[in-house]
Length: 99
Image 1: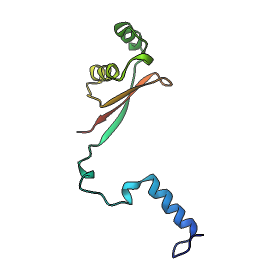
Image 2: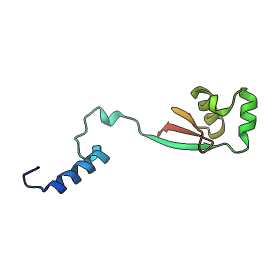
Image 3: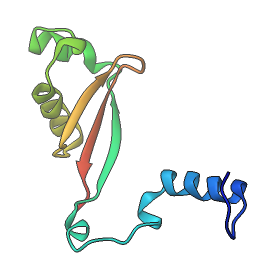
Image 4: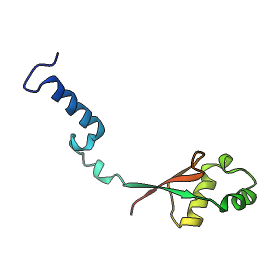
């Protein structure tokens, strides 16, 4: 068992909070300040799917990341860093760097 000033429940609660938000509990290094911040978004393509599939010659699920990045840039005007096709929601999930 855990002894000390904190009780066992308080210890595990702190460990859970530390796991969920590690930046709040650890000192930041000088290199972490240089890390870019990213945001995520979803591009829903209701009516455009058929046109895009006809243009590319493949179903959306078979398009590679480069094609998905091009689609996000053409439609949203955002230069995304990563993009994947979300089969469950029929959309492109993308991540882009915040300026």
